[in-house]
Length: 200
Image 1 (cartoon, rainbow, N blue to C red):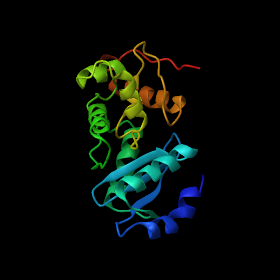
Image 2: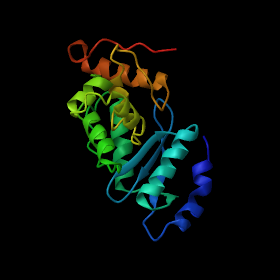
Image 3: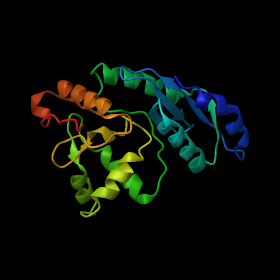
């Protein structure tokens, strides 16, 4: 596992202008470790840990909160860890852990809409755009979807292309397929749409 975030923690926290730091750590999942971040208000980061994406998302949070990051846990860390374990065991279909997801008004509207997609179901980018009253904004919806910093809990994996194919996913298409497969197994045939196909 990369230690890039951990190596920079002390510097980054020291560089913040008096704001309480974002507490960071890792949660192991069947699909690999998640880098998570929490504040006193709730979870603000859950990103699969390998590659540059986790670093970029952490840097974005530091700018948005005007805060640094430091290793640590709070009550939200434990709640997220427990709920993720239940989710992957097929015993939890709705997360209750508090979330904090700053962004512009359109991004927040998209992320709120993602949270309304039922477990075991998918929506097309075009459907989300129409639901937001922006029928021509499918591409912008896709961009906001890709900026989601709280994987799984804000279920951006439930958004697919209008032809049913997976499209993109920051954590990798194999993870997106695995998450959809898990939810469809738990939801059963009456609660699930047809299986999406991976694009190679």
